[in-house]
Image 1 (cartoon, helix red, strand yellow):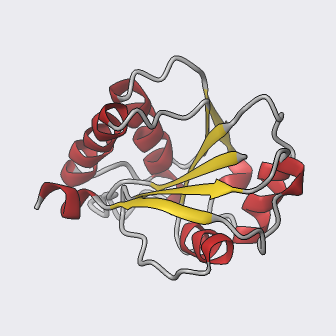
Image 2 (tube, helix red, strand yellow):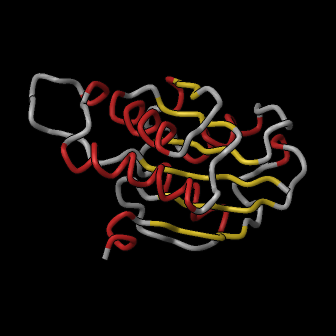
Length: 164
């Protein structure tokens, strides 16, 4: 069995209209929520074996802050191909992963995160910023994951719901 964790980047800033979408940083709430979710994942003993992240600034900042807060000992891999990737493109990326990783976290963007989660679980969940879905997949190899693989949504954690 493989476990896929999907994390949407934390809340980004729209404060500088001169910045491209790719270069937008996290805003104050995003800078709070990313490490907060990392600490929460650490407490849940839910750290991944590998983190693969969109190379957009807000996704990089989210993954880096969450990884540090969860005491992630591995390397965060930044992939330009995950910037606004579709569910199918994320599946392609998963299919190329080494099978030595049992639990992988993808950090990226909507609507791809929401579509991938829905495709794998059959459940449509709104995917707010910094949310994390944990999906168990009934496969032994990452190359066997398809958008129709019947995954089991074990957890869906939203920062706001956890704090309330």
